Amino acid sequence: MAFMKVCELEDLWEGEMGAFESEGHKLLLLNVEGGKIYAYQGMCPHQQIALIDGHFDGRELTCKAHQWVFDGVSGKGINPDDCRLATYPVKVEGEDVLVDTDGVVPLFSLAQEN
Image (cartoon, one colour):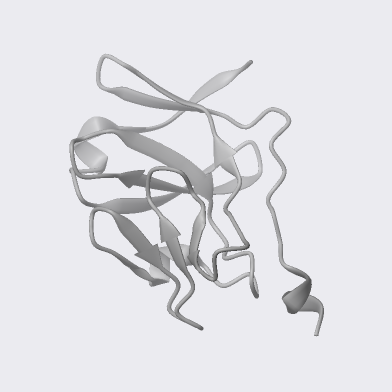
């Protein structure tokens, strides 16, 4: 695994999200309630809309385009419940937030082809 620094803790307060790029991957980092950081693909699996333009309430992420909702901790779809976001491993070292993109492929819905 090759963890790369994508931001610092001060760039992502609890309850906030941020868009970053690492090794050609568009990432969305969420700092969920409780202060744990998760990294997901930055594009909605439905129609590849940037998730940073959506809404994050500290627990759930909602895409702006068609209101698809994802759990901020697992990346699993809530509405609809048969989708999910690709998850990237995250670790925090000191004030640095690092993400490993090796072997992670963004997930996309068949609906985007229609």
